[in-house]
Structures are given as structure tokens and as C-alpha cells.
Image (cartoon, rainbow, N blue to C red):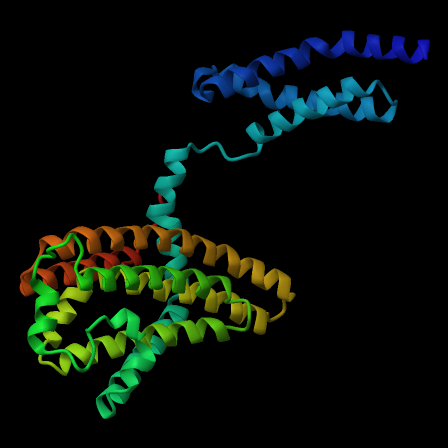
Length: 333
């Protein structure tokens, strides 16, 4: 034991100055920025890192004291992340996410997005047609307690008032409907993504369910001659909200498709690769739902002219379309 302690002491005495030098440089970086180091100091760090790795290897091979080995392991780990890890700051990462990562992930899922939109649209058309043929179908798609008088028995004057009249008690009936639709769509988005691994079937069902409610809602107002007005009211926030749900469905489809048809890769590897893209899309979906909530909360209350509502909806569609699908020359810095 005495011989081992002497050996450890000599080993540390010979090399400790280099370890301390590396530790000092890393402390300076972690307290501020690598820009504060000179060029010579920056070039010194990889050399000191390799020396520390060599020391760690020797310490392990000759079984030096555990405290020294733990110290060297921690020092090498810190240096590794500086030498080989990413050194972009938080704001750089956020900028890259919005400038390149998110739109790039969305573009890569254009087929899945088209499938989500198609399923939702077909379900909406089906609900519209079924409700038009028999008004009782409306209650199959919109719960009676949610309808709250906005059902096939309502008068056109009552429905029109819900679209334009300011609430007298702080919250109108249509405000409750709008809040329900937002919460409902947010839940659909989350579950469509989370359940995508089950071979796409739950995701497809959720997209269809969302379309059925949308179609029944539109039929109700169109049947009373208020289709244009109701569409403007809905789309002022619905363009962003429904597009977010479609993207969430696309993310779920991407995962489910990779599980069902992994190709030459294992199902785990294929699902992991699809999951990384899908997770990027879903982070952006959260942003879109937040924007939709702002539009629903402020735009619907403040904008009551049909032309202005359609202008906001069209602007939203153009902005999202250009942001996601216009070609980019290269990755963001």
C-alpha cells in the first residue's frame, strides 16, 4: 500500500500542473465565453486534453487511488464537450431551429402532411353530406351539451348573433365553442403524434374525427345561410390551428409508416430516425398552437368585419406556406 501511495504521489506531482492548467482554461470558458481565450490558449486545450486522457488511461491501468481517477474522468469529460461538442449558444440554436430545422423537417414530411389534410377534408365533406341528408347526424359529430342551442333547431338570427355580437357576460356561447375547439384540436395534435407508432391507424382516426366535427359545424351555419360568415370567423385562427393539427398528424404518420415499413433498417432504427424529424415538427406545432390561441383570443374579439377576418386567414395561409415551403439556398448560420 505504501508503494502504491508513493507511485500515485509521484504520478500526480509530474503531471498535476498540466491538469490544473486545463482545469483553469475550462473554468474560464464555463464562466464566460471561449472568445475570451487567446488563440494560443485555444490551441493549448486539445493538447492538454489528450495529455489528461493519457493520464487517465495510466491511472486506470496501474490502479491508482480512486479519487485521482474520478478527478481525471470529470476533467476529461468537461474537455471533451469543448473539443468535440457543439459550442453554439442558446439563441443560435433557437435561430437555427426556426430558420432551418423546423421548416426542413416539415418539408420532409410533405407526403404525410398531404395525407393528414386529405383525411380531414374527406371526413369534413362526409359529415357535411350526412348532416345535410339527416339533421340528426349533426349530434353524432357535435355533442349536445357543447352545441348549447347552436344546433339545427336554432334560428339564423341566433346563430348570426353568436358570430358578431359582443358577449354581455364576459363570455359568449361561441366563445365557449371556440375554447373547446382549441382545446380539442390541441389534444388531437398531441395524441395523433403520440399514437402514430401504432401503424398510423389511431392517427388516421383522429384526423377523421377532427374533420367530422369541422364538417358538421360548417353545415350548421351554411344551412342557415351563414356559411361565409362562419368560415371567416373560424379561419381567422383555424388556418394556423388546423394546419398545426395536420402537421402533428404527419409526424404521427411518419413514425407509424417507419414502424410498418422499415426497409433495410431495423424497426427500432427506422422509428428512431423518423422520431427525430417528427419531434422537431412537434416542437414547432406547439408554437403554432400558441399563435392560434392568440389569434383566437384577440383577433376573434377585435375583428368583426368579414373581409378583415378573411384577410387575416389568407395572410396566415400565405405566411405559413412561404415559411415552410419556399426553397432555401442553404442552411441557416
